[in-house]
Length: 221
Image (cartoon, rainbow, N blue to C red):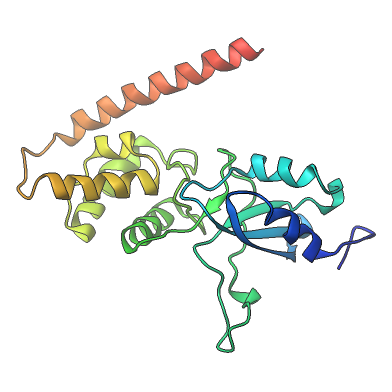
């Protein structure tokens, strides 16, 4: 393909990505974006439970290829979508949302529970995609949403998910793991937590996290 005046071999980028220890398969396409224009997008199937970050993948590719061949976005999928004839279905590949604030690669849900949680979060937050490592608060969530979100999760999942749980486990993967562990540890229900108290406790936790982040920023400055 030709991008910004440069001739690019997509297979060469894919070959470099597949040399990464955590990458099993890689596909790179050139995609048109309404805001950014034409961009290189890398889709990966990870060979490990923890997908490498976008920064790690970008640095890895940069060690072998020039800057104009570095993909703009990296997305990790559970598997590549295929056509009825067994070929890659490029039209079914998800469109990237752009770089996430956390620097994490988009990782699609791997289980029915993660898919259900991601769909609920997507509707509540009004975003087009939610990866399993995306932080609820980084995607625009705030404390006022949590009581309604907690009630909806309890209704739809038939599992106790408190407001404090949402503060403590702010990613789909962490919350799904917590729900599964809680279900295994206790078949009966305990005393229901006060949602107002849980929000107050969660706000205190968020203040502590923000203060910690601010101290790190001040140290760097």
